[in-house]
Image (cartoon, rainbow, N blue to C red; front, side, top):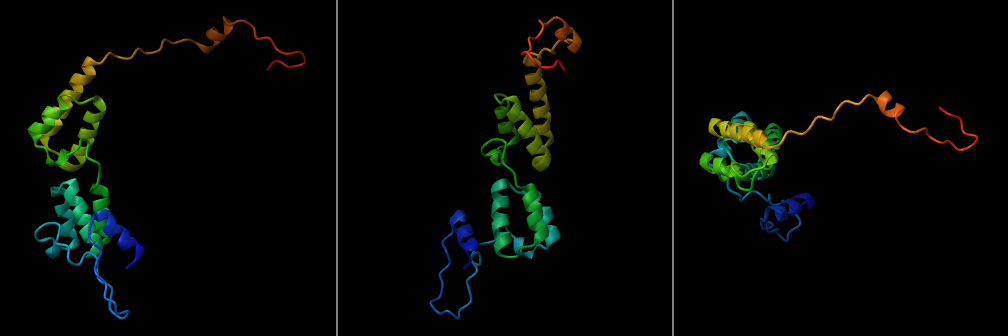
Length: 174
């Protein structure tokens, strides 16, 4: 067993595989007994697997990635998983319904609203959520005071009114 697979087992919470005492025996695959991440996964070719990823939550994608690495290790599928994996904008976001997200947005700050919008565009693309995000975002922006634009002050005017700078003896003015 390699150090990497031992570390992966510890991080995933799986029990390490039992090794035979005979030195000639083949190493046991740590993921060999793990069930597929979802029904029919083992029958999917790489294109079908990549297409199916968008239908799953971040928690499920984590299981797919672990299974894929320990079984088929297909580069294109792992690359798509790397792209698709992201931090949820709110804890448990993927498990929330549209109504629950809408309710959560009512008390959210602008930063959270923007994270929800970006995450939803990338993963869910649900019109109801995106419309609500846009509505709440407009509402928050309208309720916050506009920051004042700094008034224009020409650089020459500011210098002309300042007091002369005293220089030590022997120094040359620029």
